[in-house]
Image (cartoon, rainbow over all chains, first blue to last red; front, top):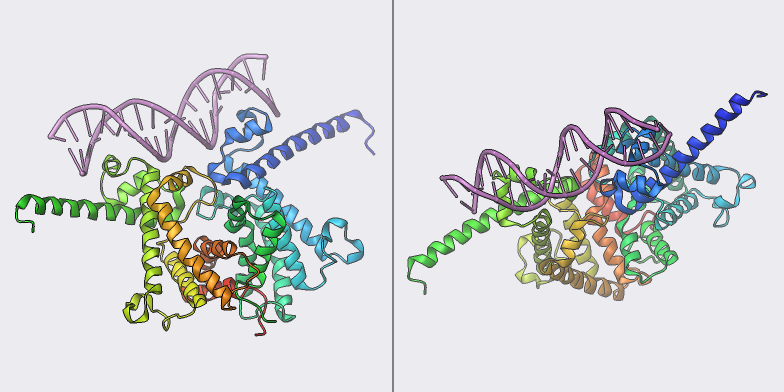
Length: 222
Length: 222
DNA sequence: GTCTATAATCAGATAGAC
DNA sequence: GTCTATCTGATTATAGAC
């Protein structure tokens, strides 16, 4: 279809741009996971990417936009994971089937939570600022982010309602409370406290958090 | 015993000083709960207390010390609450007996968690910065804070072990993981998310968080 | 000890050459 | 688009009079 050189060259340049911006969001993602939005400085980002600070501002107009782009990327990764889980088993890639194809809604929620914890332990989960900040306002104003968030929430919400119908999730809990409880695992300080204590492996930490999240602290006789 | 005027006058001045510093820590406590350490500015504190910023620095040498003092105060409040719970029922004040004198270790842990959530919803729970910051270092270096923290942890830890012996808390969970899980309730974003949604009363929010914390998300047949 | 005024620093953002 | 050098504003902290 494209026979002239110009479009190809443009496409190449566009690819380079995209790759550069990908490198930036990756760094931001990591720093956001490590230190959070407030503690992360634009100088650090520039240093880690290996370009000048002014160059960063050619790609993104503010620190908030920078973080926003990273959050949108993370959201899209989450969305891709959820869609893999949703897809019929025959079409699933290996990535989506760490445990034997989770059929029930509860198992899908568990698989998602486990995936979140793994990401967090790998230092790839950009954490939302729990307190109000300029970032929150930016995120709220970002269509791509809000669309992604609503999409994710819809999918998880449907599984939650289904799991309650299945008699797996406590029906006395409003679905929104269950959803927030799952979201909260992505910024659970327990994970990093346990990691810092160096008493347990990542796998053990995940198992413990999964247990407290779904089974609670109290003993289960059933 | 003290017959001269000088000691009395000094005691009065000391009382005034203490009252002033109490007013400061109260303000810091509230602001720390509302915005967190990074977002809180010393100017705000001075404005809320009603004194000049320079005067603040006569009482505390740095922003970290300021926050540290507030955290220590909160820790001592927690300690007082735990000691009330521990005291024999006959000596308990009304404060410590919101629910019919919690006898079992599990009930004591529940009462403590509930108290934490109430404090948080009242905006009086200064939240630790989840990410590394200058504050963390200051807290670690503060003897009063670390002593208080260890004291609190010891008391809670004893109840956790007892509750596991009683067959109330899942014995497969290391006590330290249970302890962190309880601590995490003090900075649980679920609480503020639910509060922001304005769909539930404070009492309902507390019940839901208590339920997910102790009983988990999964339904209980027992 | 409290105040006003100011220093010192740091971080987000920009100018302008190439 | 990338760079170096700089501006700007906010914030912690202090000097010095009273």
